[in-house]
Image 1 (cartoon, helix red, strand yellow):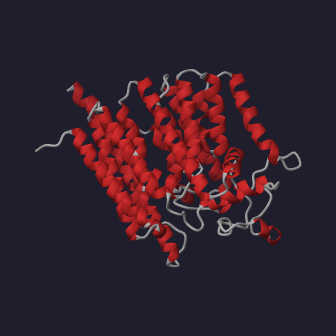
Image 2 (cartoon, one colour; image 1 turned 90 degrees about the vertical axis):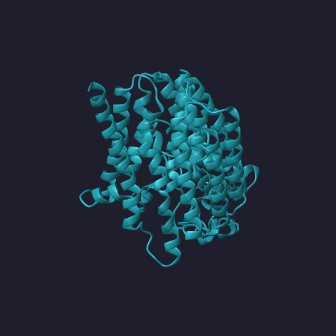
Image 3 (cartoon, rainbow, N blue to C red; image 1 turned 120 degrees about the vertical axis):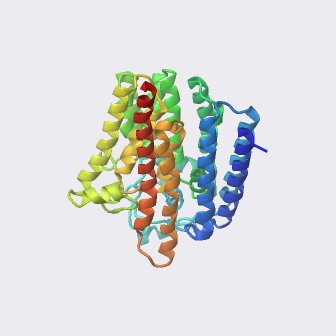
Length: 426
């Protein structure tokens, strides 16, 4: 008996639930086969579900409701799991804690013996303790706000999951305004990285994703002040969406941009050091940190890292300018491609960095990016290899699999674009 599209989606949702359940039980062994194999199965099931979303214009409302319930279930499975011993969330707790104790996280160094009494069991294992914080002021405000309510990693994870869930109604609103099927919200909610990196490890990126989507929705409705301020706050969480500034040209007023700049500037006021804007360890991060960076590594052989970082930003800006010229109307594609171009050339490309792209991937033109969000899953092997004494380096075969999949998808889509018009003419 042939299954209907709805039943196929239900079946794929069941596969996702089983695979992510197994994955959550092995969350402490991140990168090991017991973790990465079920996560890869979940990624494949996710891509098959997206294929169903492309081939079926509409789904019954119950499919969307049940799909969101399933997503909530596997979020909860990861939420109750403790993060890794050196996950970034330990730093988040530290940054929030020292702010409330009157210290500047951009100046204090966690490994300083004089600050030993400030540590808690959750902050003693934070990564890179010899460096001050690299996170922008918007992220610091979030850390302080959450830890003021309850100082724990679990409280931060709950706050991140709330932001994740808040994206769903905003995205449903965007889909309704664009006349797209509501089922596309599952293309966001079902992504396995949301379970592992938001509910599991807890990453601040999801806060910026929510703000960026709010900015997109406001820009679509021509709420220009809200669009500008939300974009500024998203940049203040992490700097990645700064490459989207050309898309706001002539869509917001100059005074809206100035207001956004003032809001972001006020966030930095508590951290000013002798009148200078603090950057913490951001310079060290760009100079020394490397992960999953084949394009950056190639360019770094012939140019200093500062210049290559500038080229990564320039790639995003130029892509945004091209999208602004090419598309008179606002589109989700125009938000996805500039950030993807910049990340492709970045010195560090962790799986959770791709969370920024997820709400904007719902067209055939963004399929290479969508595939990238799944083909990056094998990089988790590096976490396991580190426990075996191997260097912090992505093996070549994983790079080939990850970026080769993206390149192949790009070639296929480009070829179809050229062959279809020719076939239509014939």
